Image 1 (cartoon, rainbow, N blue to C red):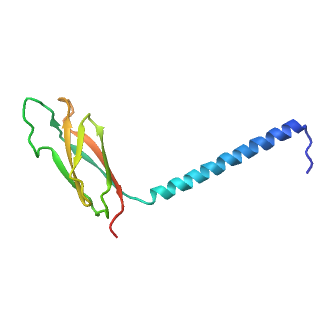
Image 2 (cartoon, helix red, strand yellow):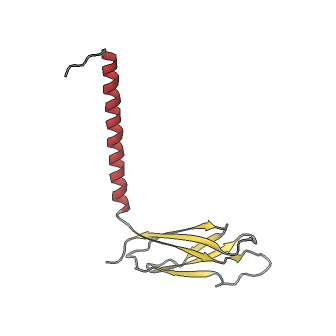
Image 3 (spheres, rainbow, N blue to C red):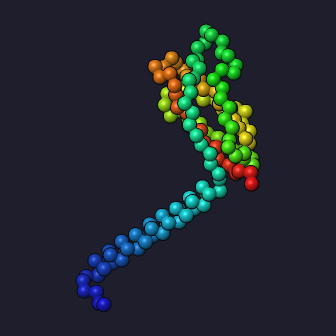
Length: 130
């Protein structure tokens, strides 16, 4: 097949095609490398719907009130990376006593809220025991 058109159009089409292939190649490489990194870790996550403790300075806080112990269904080989966030309701989350099979979380709200219950999501990433 013979090109019937000016050289400037031919060069423009070749350049756009080359850039398109370069972008697709880069996208495919990033998608493959992203998949490889996420497959290295096992992930557990869940939600809690709890009543937080009000953070009132005048009343001394009770030590073990509103402390929740979360046991993993499968233990991790090493200490997992645990993150927790408040989905509904502005609360302060304190993670402590992290172990391979469980962790504890204390939930404190900064002010008296109209919402009685709050929703908290936690995620643990690591390697399971074989």
